[in-house]
Image 1 (cartoon, rainbow, N blue to C red):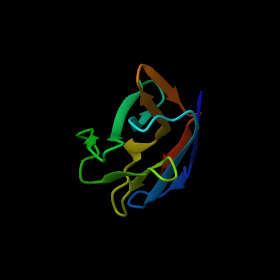
Image 2 (cartoon, rainbow, N blue to C red):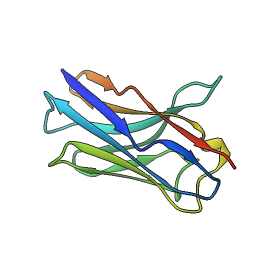
Image 3 (cartoon, one colour):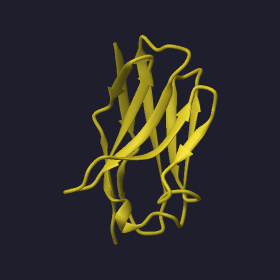
Length: 117
C-alpha cells in the first residue's frame, strides 16, 4: 500500500504564489509517476502536471509557464510550485496528488487552494 499526504494549500491573492508538497510512503516502486490533479466545484478532476521517476514532465496547457512540478526521489516527495504573479482565481480548486506504479493508482486526500482578493 501507498499513502500520500499533501500540504501547502491555502488562501492566496491573485498574483501570489504557493508551493504544494506530496509526501509518499509505503511500498513505492523505483519506477512510478507522480502527478497533481485539481477539481473545482462543479467540474471534473483534471490533470495539472505529472513527473516520472526519471524526471520527465507533462503539463496541462492552462498551467504551462506558470506552474513547475518537481520531485525528490530520496524523499519520495513531489512538489508543485505555483509561481509568483501567476495564480489566477480560476486556479481555485482542491488539488490532489496521485502516484501511479505498475497497475495501481493511489490518491491523496487533497488540499484546498483558493485564489481570491
